Image (tube, rainbow, N blue to C red; front, side, top):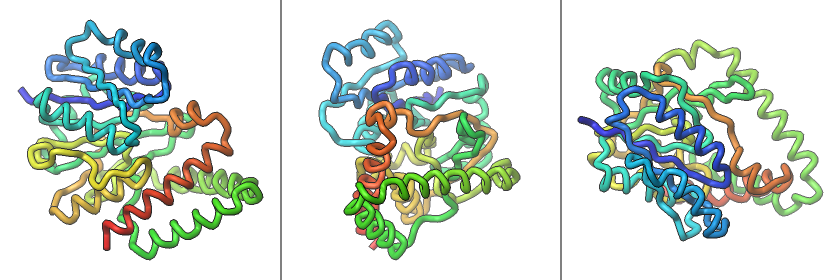
Length: 290
């Protein structure tokens, strides 16, 4: 029996984490399912963190890992991936943001069918953004070049240097770009309804198949705190000859940025945080692809 393990990165929002868990527990083939909740909310008090642990203490198929180091997204997910691989002996490992919800009771059967047909290393499901209806997967059709990475780093540093003055313009441009992106995606529905090969998968829901899990002891390398994990993963897969497939037969819904909004409060702080982390992660990416 192939074990399917769901690694959920918990941060701040217990309600969102529980919605994700409950959507998994509604699936068929529960005997194959295991769940790892990675508690990455290191800023919370121990008393508050224990709430999460007590909530699932009686469920034998759910393990809660408490992260004590502030290692960021890649580090925390690697801990969960390694636990699923070594302790739960999982064949399939799904790495998820806690604001992912699954909408198919027969998801496990669909996963089996997809792997049998494509025999790939990484699978990306059709992830729909709940508020806008846009498809978030694939995230990109190719990895970024070194020149593009350098441009991103340079522009983010410039914007951050004068952030207090530039914020209104940056906020407006960010909103405009999001609306433009949503409009483009809505015009290209056919693309998202077809299987796509060797794309950059969306990091909020990644499926590592037995081919990947057998060979790789961690999901993300090199580690970044936030952002560019997908480009680094795709680059690593390309170097090793691993195949990435987007399969719209697998579906989930998502709402982007709920954890950061809950943590940072204002849009001004959230946008600054995003730009700082993108520049930081992009530097790691630039050095990796050299």
